[in-house]
Image 1 (cartoon, rainbow, N blue to C red):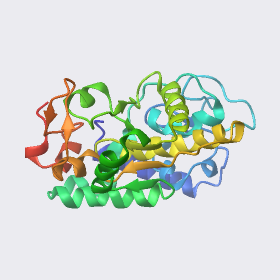
Image 2 (cartoon, rainbow, N blue to C red):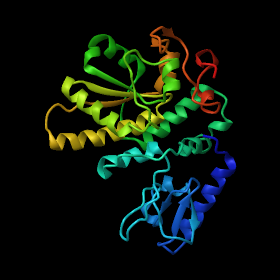
Image 3 (tube, helix red, strand yellow):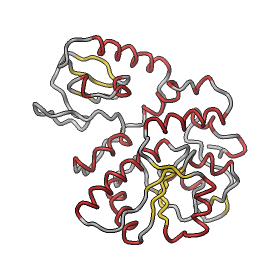
Image 4 (tube, rainbow, N blue to C red):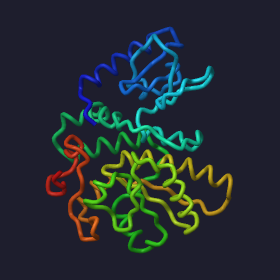
Length: 282
């Protein structure tokens, strides 16, 4: 996640060129090498991540040529790619990073903000607008659920092991969004929740990764329900992620099960969203 303002500017300029271009068959490639076939097949957000390219046939991010009539995958990271694995039946993912998350910092003007609460609020507003179908649960409500019906909850920690080891919700199950076993883990999680008649709660640092995975779990759940009717778990994302949780003085544990009072800041830029007293030193 080391993209800067210059890269963001390039993406916006490329988007403007594409929007003005009459050539709907122009091939495109984002800054990480992912290619698409036609501008009209991209969402407005995805348009911001592309630049024009006039040579070679469209190629997927996994390297396979795209047959005529097919659409290349537009998402620019594994987190975005998971949204399509349910229908595509993919068994593997690339290892590209979340450059869209970097772009989000610039797009929302977070790099110019200094108040952590304002920054978190801006991210949550953006998530609500871009993931309107994802149900959210606030930290206080989730804490009461954990106290009252812990056996009816499946907590999915949508972060990597380094983040998880510093602190996590007790009983949380790590689901690394960049891990090789993501598809398998999500399938197992859905099956376990249905078997236990439990609800699923995703959480991460601030809610970005949790929103993406919650949306993907909903898609996977819909497919499972069509094949095997039965209990349909509700799927939630923790509003504000662990930032809202830890600032609310709610309990966390480390990898040894000991009480923890800080969270992993993800990186220097995103770490600005959490107050220093709640931020682990990395």
